[in-house]
Length: 257
Image 1 (tube, rainbow, N blue to C red):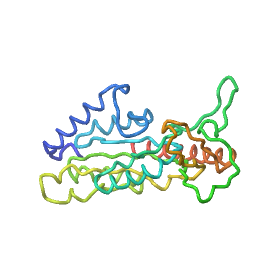
Image 2 (image 1 turned 90 degrees about the horizontal axis):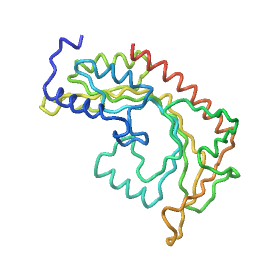
Image 3 (image 1 turned 60 degrees about the vertical axis):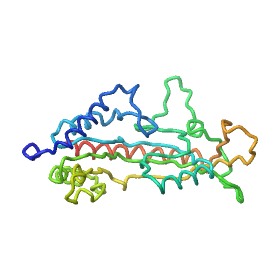
Image 4 (image 1 turned 45 degrees about the vertical axis):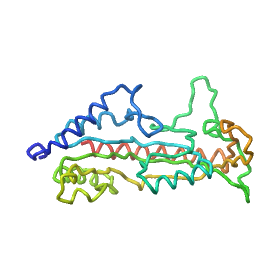
């Protein structure tokens, strides 16, 4: 269907540039995500999409489990001010710190039997479940995020079957990233389709870190991150995330078909 539609030259130039960047070896490729390369779980899907006339992926994530600690309050305020002045990609986390990231279902069964606790893996120490009052805190969040793709299309006609396939395969929150493509101007071409299913997302605050108020301390000093939840609660979050990874994979295969 898309092969018969005319493809603007400006789109083809953009697609060629993107494909040349994707051809860079993983070790040399970097972007704003903590991983920095196309996730192995969706490489075949990305290849299939980019082989179609009038389509090219601009960013992607196969889905991930992550544990993230917020940045210091002063840095968060600076980042917020900067974000009001310029566009900040949704994957950016500013001054915070990734404590754990996995783009695959979580597995914790080493062959030698020396199994670590989830608290150890996430870099936290067990606490009493109570958050301190009257203190500046940096929160720690556990998240599961399902697959998301951004697909640049040559025209709205090329975008339509992508949106239809995304919706029918379970990615019901998919849509056009902006309405600029509806304007009849030279810069309004190449609409971007976001393929996503936010209903699978999961987030929970699981810990905190007290902000260091000692101005003489080194910024490189490793903070003590205290848990607000039990080991069993973390195991439950992992189990739910692994189940959602399975649903995510099923939807991905339906979209690919």
